[in-house]
Image (tube, rainbow, N blue to C red; front, side, top):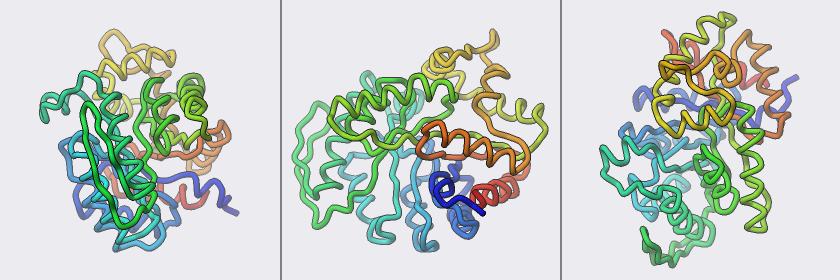
Length: 315
């Protein structure tokens, strides 16, 4: 029999191919019995919150989330008002992750001041959290100012993206969770979990959720996994902060700037369906609260998604 505890702690995280594809995947995920669906939002891609509104009215139970909204693309009060609109469509079914995104888009495209992204993100949370939790915010900071009241406070969870220890500590202090991305298992255990706990301890509160990104490919062809994962990780490896994180985890990049097979073996789950389910359960047993399972891109993305949804719904 499926374990409802495991099933409630896993979901699919995906890159949107089109507006229709996002809504369709959320509907298919709910139909398969999957508890969560998170849409990734690159900083110049389709607006995820708009797409989730469409998905909300086509679904009934599934929790819909963002992984993540690049926070600096909108004022924190604009984000709050979008969250309130979503909650009006499907109360209690949203998990709206935010994050700093990457300097190469925030600076090169939006020309945002990116000298102190975590300091800016901290202020963002100091506007968003009281607005959503209490219905009012009065804040004067270096980057943001806000004075506003709302008729209700839906308490929508707002986790943040975290890569290095300072971001995990910030999540522990102020956010409703920390969302990793491409962090190897060893790094989550040795760096992320202790930093998240430190942040929570410093604020005198319980540790929020640790939401771990897990790339998956439903195949027993490990050579193909290495090829596909290597291609898709190249973009991240080119970013210095990812390269440093990989090195801290014990997997420095190769001389040509590509990731090593050992990193892929740690990070990417693959195999037959039963093997994949077992590997995901092992990660949950390590103390990871939620798994954001991300299908690697293949020649048949929709078919690959369906195979993965079947696995997740059957956990």
